[in-house]
Length: 151
Image (cartoon, rainbow, N blue to C red; front, side, top):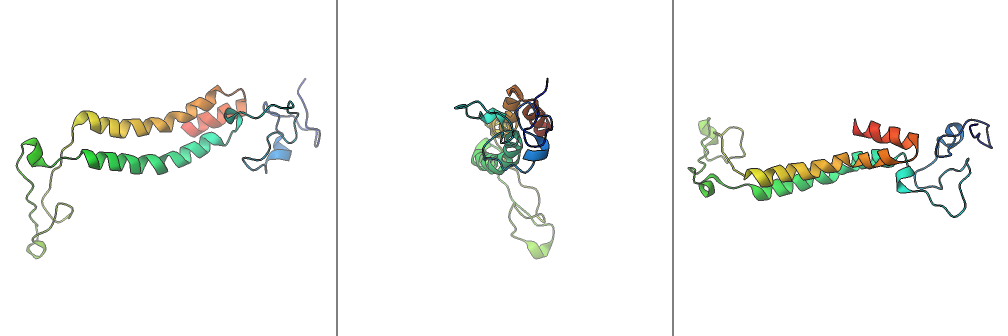
């Protein structure tokens, strides 16, 4: 028989929370205010349904700048790789003396080694898959949140 909420009589979720009573619960507040929680047992970080979403939102804020910094450190100028140096020429006489960053100049090329470049993008990208850890939670609600966060 399913457990019911002592406040409203609604059926409790797997984690002991009640949707009508707990929908305003703030993350970080005591878990399961409407259900029974065994004395002395703390909630595991895998039992919080909001953590996969928090991870997915905050991870790019960290990984994108880190990837950009790592990639910029890997860039080599063409003469370091044995190619002719960049010589930006503006396509419009008024803008002569432009740099490689100008969209009005001829293309400039920069080079990076393949292995470190792949790692610079691949490793931070793997952090986006961390919500897979919440799939191993005992709560179906948390598993559903983890799968939703991964999509």
